[in-house]
Image 1 (cartoon, helix red, strand yellow):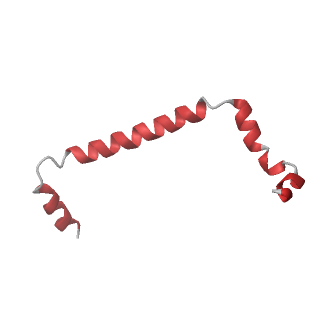
Image 2: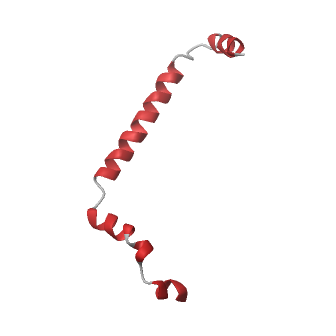
Image 3: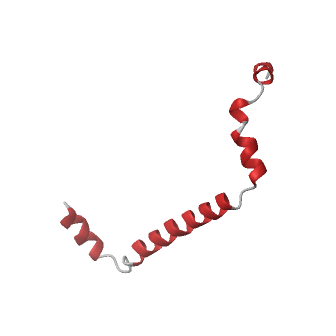
Length: 62
């Protein structure tokens, strides 16, 4: 099965750039996600982590 796919990909000119481009997009995405997570404000993280323990009466009224 892989032989059929490999043969078809070899006939496309410039196909060797796609694995590099995919790796670059993958790497940039996770570096950006890590940076965003690392620089997130501690107060906001604390606020979001306390949401499950919030006031139940205010949730019922909404």
